[in-house]
Length: 321
Image (cartoon, rainbow, N blue to C red; front, side):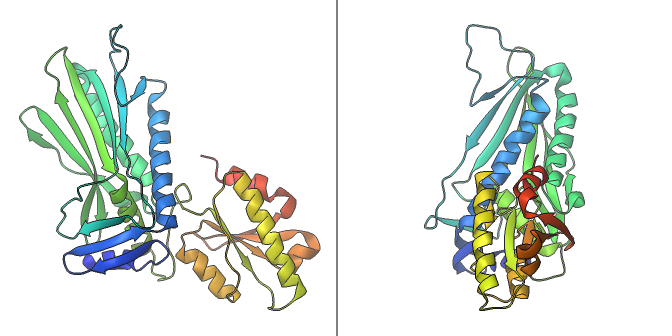
């Protein structure tokens, strides 16, 4: 387990490691990690909305209307999200002890007691599906066996790595004291999700330089690479073109990574793979002559030809959720 954790924290683009030893690691989050956590959080919200907006009302923090009888089924979301920057340190303990401060995301559902187990089973499926939908290894996640204590039932969503199982979310149901209502809760943390998805990304591919992240959560959706000789007028023109394309994509709210283009072409591609970039736009002399370039999918390393005039619209379609 520790060996694979070390692989994650060797990713200098994502972490600044302050201290690492047999007990744990102390680190700060660089921009790609912060964006990745933000994307996970947004996707969590989107999925909950998709699963609930036609079936029940969902409130932020608590049910607010005290003048009316609450709905028979309703939910609340609680988002205790920590604010990170380049200087705020986190600690990961290898013995499994959780840090004191974590970004907890919690969905609470109030359901009729006679339907409690039905909702309990249903939301196990929903949460397992969500984890699978943002991973590059969909069969990584399973549901643990039931645990019963008094009137409470609990399961966990577990990432089943070859080197050991790691719980990622807890789902609990228990009866309330009155009104024939049961309380169902789904709880996870963004810090756990960050580490687990990066762990999956670096261990699910045999290529050391390849970080596999699902395009829904990848911190940078598109980057660029120049396949052209150095010190040419055309190269300078392509760099300016990449900057322009980068600006247009960002205006469409598509996150991008704009390299410095100081590396040879093959190392430019490897750098993008290290970053977990979903697609790389490869600009060449043909791009200047005919407006065409290859858009390479990092998951398959296959490319398709796209015209400059259509790029920002096509990219918007690719990343529509």
